[in-house]
Image 1: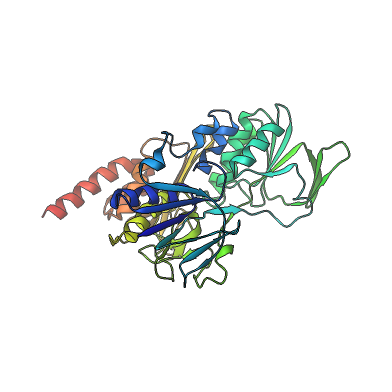
Image 2: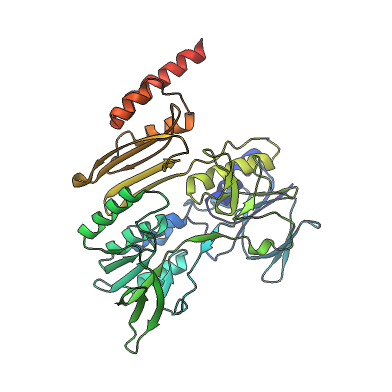
Length: 420
């Protein structure tokens, strides 16, 4: 069998390694669209902060890792797919046949359609090439504007802060990390950043960017005075890479639509990672979860199904853990609640501590935590096991910090019931 994997991020690499383990000697090709060894985008901020060298971004570090497993790494970009002939056409003009194909092409940054986004000093921070340019283009004291304070933006924030630049954050939403924190949590993160010397502007929209004669940048803001910068880094979201699938017959929505076995609408073609619109554990619907744990599990599950080991995917849990200048924030599942459900909150703004639990019946379905590091994994465990809390729901409503006691008691009860 000729296995071809398009995309050399975590989903693609883990899929290739899983296939190599299941079928030693199989023909496995891993196609990377960048001229780099397979690497993780999520560690690029550590490179910006100069905590690691470029080699530290690589997903595998031992010499000959892929060759030793019979995985051929090819650096090409895909122009189109022809499922009828099972052929991939490269942008370079060549082509490649496949027996079974995995699409793990990830996502790309989305830039707002405003004047000036094409100026050279307006950067994304998505690839190693981007990181090199930001490193070369910044020095301590430079005025840097970061557009976007979502999950990715806040990771970049940490790295830019470490470079000792004068940092301003501009976010259109009314709070930071709006897709993983409610207003209370997002505002607390914003206040924490301001206390560290970062200028945070939420509910703010950039309408244009202009390069001045002296080489500096001027950012026009809706309803506010312009601000100046030496560099702008754009982190306003990403979109699944599905453009090359036009005309292939593969069904797409926000990403590539897949079933519970990671297969697309076309036989022998699978998808995994940030490009895949797969099952959501909490809602039962299909969504794109652009996080590395989901990509890793997608890749492993897809490979098993490609090799004939039928394995259903139970769905990915929305989960994010973020370190913002030393403040740890976490969210799991339906953290913003569910229709007809209950919730409990505990807020200590003075000490930057916040805990919110969301219930459906007597089952914990979502949680978010700020400034808490102990027992946070227990929240995930209760959500994923869907264990009934029984009387412990009332205990948690009275004091949500009793989460470890509730977990131990409920797991023990479930174990006894299963044993009986």
